[in-house]
Length: 93
Image (cartoon, rainbow, N blue to C red; front, side):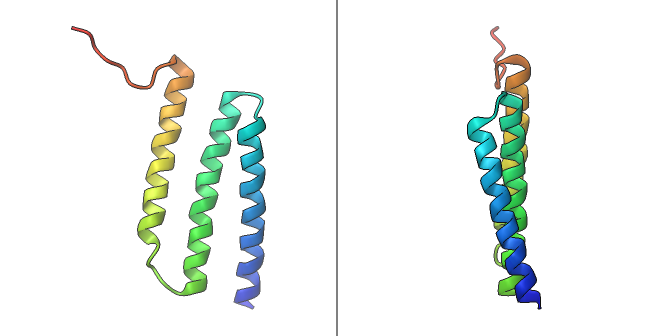
C-alpha cells in the first residue's frame, strides 16, 4: 500500500515540476519565473523526501538542506534584483 501511494505521489510531483518548468520558460513576467523556480525547489525537496521514505534511509538529508538553502538564497537574490536591478551593492568610497 505504501509503495503504491509513494509511486503516485512521485508521479504527481514530477508533473508539478514539469508544469513549473514550463512556467519558468514561458512566464509572462519575471516574478512568475521566480515563483516557479522557488516552487521547483520545494518540489525537489519533497521528491527527495519521498525517495528517502521509499529507500528507508536518511542519506539524502544533507542534499535536502543544501537544496533548501540554495532555493532560499536564490529567491532572495531574484527578489532584490527585481526590486532594484542590482544584486550586490558596492559602496564606492
